Image (cartoon, rainbow, N blue to C red):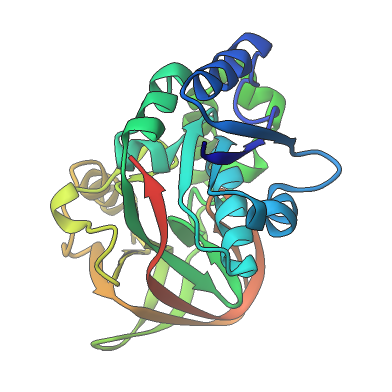
Length: 292
């Protein structure tokens, strides 16, 4: 009998119904698994995993991308080498989209039970682990500034509304960017270091550019538009996934360093990443295994 740890964030997305949780637990038990359920509340998912992962063979995350990030961080900090299962119940669910995981709880359970461990690269952002993206600039504040009540009521549309509103207050940042192939300096309204095919459910990355376990990040830098036509052209480049254009640049690197003239707000896996003037990011090749 496999002993599984189920970490549940009941506040992700529109919230997890009792019937959905019942379905998840029932299917796992019917398969012969031993289940211990831990609710994120007084203790966050990272702490729950850090304290309890050693007693289990698999940890299953029931929540959004932020919850998954915390679960994975707890595993890495505990040095417990067990796979992760993901049942997505968040709003954007970028990791689930990237991995083609079902957002139907019953189907997600079947994927975990019938799947195999697949390696996944993980990032380290100035000492903090992240699963799929660390970014600054335009749109990055949308995920964590949007009120949870709005996320539940409007779902994905809340992100879209927030993103459109932010276009009108874009501020460029003077950046010195160091990566495997050299140094780039310029003014950018967005910079993202990612291991994902989806960003906030709004921007898609061509799967031909992304390998989730190659030891490399994809980095997208978006230049400051000089006028409205340039802004529209930039947005068009992003929507049509036209990289390495005049306004949008994509690079691949195992390490990244950003230096700014002032403190800049970052988001990490859709959550507030704090203010930073200097950032070092490292790719940990195949740091974790996820079931699918």
